[in-house]
Image 1 (tube, rainbow, N blue to C red):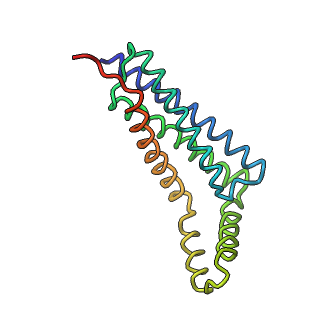
Image 2 (cartoon, helix red, strand yellow; image 1 turned 60 degrees about the horizontal axis):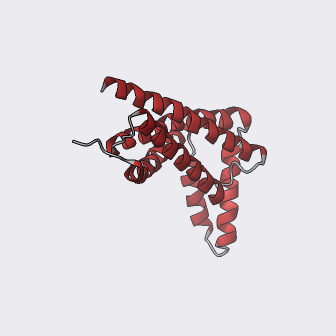
Image 3 (cartoon, rainbow, N blue to C red; image 1 turned 60 degrees about the vertical axis):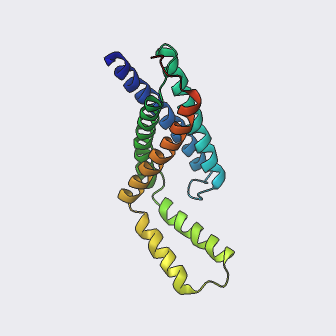
Length: 174
């Protein structure tokens, strides 16, 4: 049992680092294409597909190391662990992005969002625009961004782990 816990920890760290690295590489690609502040849904979908792929691959690798068995609880532990490690790497990248690579990222994102709101709702009153801007400015502090990043990673990690674990699981015979 202790060997299994060591194996789960190794899988979490290895594949969490892998997912974090791939995610940072993808985010850097968006940065170099000057798309990092646009919150594009396509980029979100690609990120989700990457996460699904890495988590399912990690479940399969654990199952191979564990005599072909994987329980749902193990899948959930592994998935949440990988998601947490990856999210922490993502938080570090976001801090580097917003403080070193492009300190104007948050301002660019705010302006892009405000332009989008104006284009979609030309009749919107200035008061509503001011409220939207104020909320977005409050939500873009480093602490809140880090918390949101971790919460979303754990949420999606849980959902993917639950579904993937149900698909990949194979219980030990009693």
